[in-house]
Image (cartoon, rainbow, N blue to C red; front, side, top):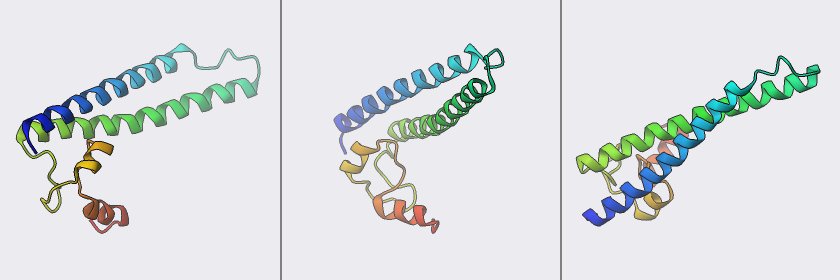
Length: 117
């Protein structure tokens, strides 16, 4: 992988990072807008609570992706981007284009998904 590839993936990662940060901020601000206690009936309060819980779950998953993006940016700085964290082999470019924060090649990802890694 050459420096242009690294720059391209860095740009892609930073754009995804900015998008996720905006979503997390929006989720946090919606959590503070109201707790539903002043809703007229029990059903409305339940819906507000469910929406807040869903927002929290989404932002938790997004925070995990943010962490993975930051780790990928660090790998770019270290010159290790595009190498599998497990076997050290190359991660295929189409895989990096689809999931630029990935840490594993396809084979090692399958091992991890099965719990063998």
